[in-house]
Length: 316
Image (cartoon, rainbow, N blue to C red; front, side, top):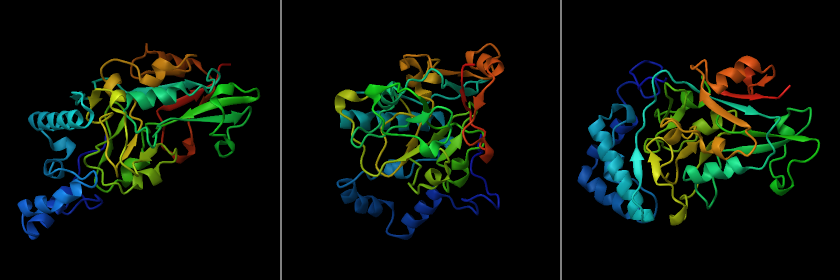
């Protein structure tokens, strides 16, 4: 787990200056916070600009339970105002003794993309433009050259003879390069192995997107659009609450489900049992059994030293 920002010499927010403190100082050096709020109000009417409460919100790891409760209520109010439903927003914490991993059977995947669309629906991803966390690649049999993969195949004609299908999403690396480059610590790795993003802390610099070798992060170039009747009201602060324009997002193993003892949406919807998910620290879990018994494993770009928690295998 990435530690909370420190004052070390190599810390990108060291020397007593982090993003919030810089903004606070800048505000006080102008005409005061009240005047700043007044000056920002017109901007809020023309784009997704943060309220003063959001602007001054503490870093996630610094918030007390009481402060988080206030933030969650604010999010619920914002969602209700925008979409007309009262959501249930939680801040589920990692469970002790749990490290999540994913195993995907490339022999069974038929390229139907049901996982892609279930993910979009579960995680309140923008529909216009549609943001997808999962890419499904059509690969030629005998080849693992992702540069030659087909992204835009017809899902109505799968599976095609002479091909297999490889879904790719966030690999939840043990050594995530995306975390290292974030200048404001808006992304970090949790004890259960999930790399998360605080959308309120993200400044949209896209360094993490550039650092990810799996093209797993998505940037909201425009304000996300979700039909009111498509909103999933079961939300978590670090996962599927609605995002704003100008922030990053990505797969988070459906932590609003998995930290509550359920499977990710993509696992539940898969018609062929291709996807397996569970706790690698439990020797009796299905993923532990797969990793002990299967002989052919693939970790994407393992030569980069990212140590993905996402394993691919074939039936042999």
